[in-house]
Length: 77
Image (cartoon, rainbow, N blue to C red; front, side, top):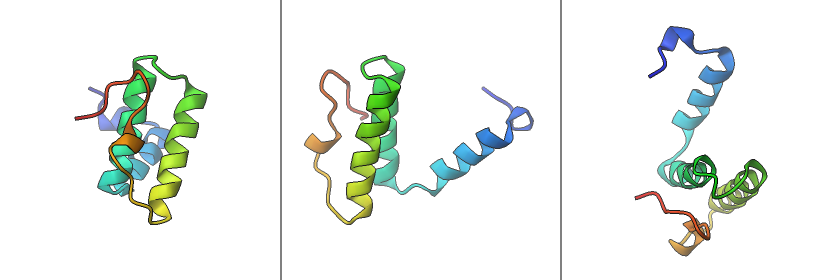
């Protein structure tokens, strides 16, 4: 695990943004990130998939379980 004193300003900024997310935003992000990490999607697909769902959630739309599925990816449990 990375020690806090070895984090860059960019690392700290990313952590602050993650902490500021609500539970649905974290679920969307982590589902996309898991698919990216396992190479089921690429960075461009991750950005598009995540942004579309975060935008919908932030606009007040309720997301369903189906909205959180990525074809071929394992959902975050």
